[in-house]
Image 1 (cartoon, rainbow, N blue to C red):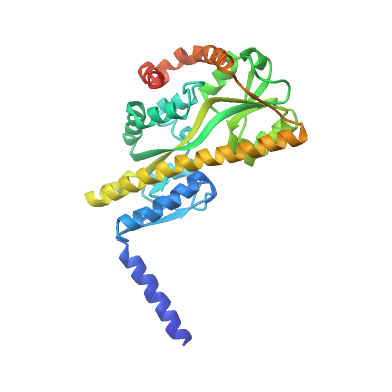
Image 2 (image 1 turned 90 degrees about the vertical axis):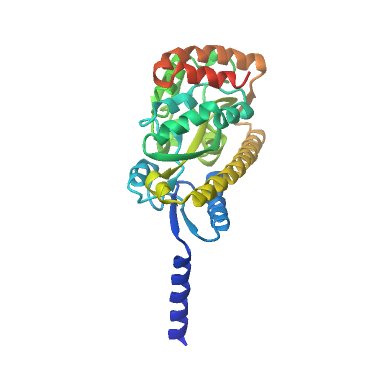
Length: 329
């Protein structure tokens, strides 16, 4: 009986693997219950449905396969077929993606998505394509907010003299220099302890990062500024893409379109629910003061920080920056 069961399971496994003409390894570095993780799983499900089992997508969350630093290299050799790294992982290949680091470029989520789904977004995807990948879509993390331990950040001058942790980005360094603040480049893994120990006074991050890493517990002030954007680019191995017949390429495009629409909804829902939890902590403990900028206050920040844009015309392109701004007018 045991032998029969063993043979049956081997036969089933063989038939399943034979049923799929193509196998996609989709690597990402976050947990399955995040918007990116859920979207990757949804994409896998839809690809298998739309291809009638001809394409099998195996999703590897939590950097099980590899981290984002090496995944782009592995994709060149088709060792991994898909990934969704943050924009910062591409800026060495396509410096123009630093566009998304520019402070106060987007008025709101509608403006952002017009840019991503429009001419500017397509141009950036094309630039990544020329580097030997197939760029499929943009997925949201969210807008960045400011936190610090010294004083409420209401006017641009309030940041003067404060030390802010930043990612390694020329744009973000200039952003804080323009505020007469002191940018300090630190790895993400060190941010909590740096805030706790006073190595830095503040930081900028999305609500999801502020909540999951508990930065709000070691900060006194939080400003809902929506001044920058963090997102991901979904890419596929060009070697793998070129092997696909036209009908299977259509399946990938349809599934990614559906998954992208879902991911944006999930990202907003997560942002809203986690902000509600931070606000609950603030109301309950009195240890965190949250400031929502008025339009006039935000306009002052916009005027101050957009002054750095000309410094990046050479790297990003004046045309791209101006088209992105115009999309929100």
